[in-house]
Image (cartoon, rainbow, N blue to C red):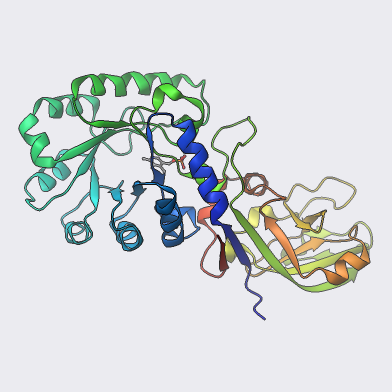
Length: 368
Ligand SMILES: *Cc1c(COP(=O)(O)O)cnc(C)c1O
């Protein structure tokens, strides 16, 4: 039997999350952001399940991702957030993808391409990443000939601070976006990521663009997460050993046991996106609160001991009753019992990064 860690991806929970975000979106259409391999979960199964549920518009980062989505969503609108370049144009045309145009070069390229389908226009309202300046967007709005040649359907912008709904930068970006909206006519407008879909109806406009919330991640800071977990990561127990007080655990001999400790060594490590920063190394163990992460074993939270290595993680199972330990074969790294965002916090990052770091070694199984 394989010792590869497992990801169980609950497509029914994914669909329930999309339906919920669709409800939050009110009159606006709810799209789905499936970039980065659908946040690590698999573009094809995710796009298939969401299409069946009624999702008609998808956003990916790169043309290659768009081509994969097209194979399973033949009738959907698929937008490429990174825009268009001379060398990605053939792939975009071949798969009937729609670029999100973010500068005048891209606009010129799309305008002179006679086969071009629909596109979106990106305006940068306060992130300084991608998109036209507000002034450039307003200029474009006056060039109706250019707009019809482009077959522009959507005007969109992206928020920097939506996870904090009271952040004043949201207001500034909203004002900038509204200025553009006032100048265009007969486009769809799209402004809301997951956080704004959940918290700001006035940001919904015509089309919401949730990503992380679909996959069960936390989009908003400091409020209970209304989404259902979609992904469970599990790892196999390879060996259990009894160690004595004073002994060391893991690389660097960084963790010193302060009492007799039962240790389970589990398969998987930082090569599987289970970041090294989750290590419980370097802190006094057991009686003190370890600062590293935990895994879940049949109702018991087991602290990680020593450094997370490339393929192995050592965890403290001293408190797990023997009969549970004898039967246990797998531990949960995150999922229904340890929220992905709690695991992410323990390694100093966010759920987005943990999900998209999961890597190729997992056996992925899909429910639903
Ligand atoms: C990633 C992304 C989204 C989705 O953001 P979430 O926070 O995951 O909901 C929406 N719009 C754009 C432009 C993005 O890059």
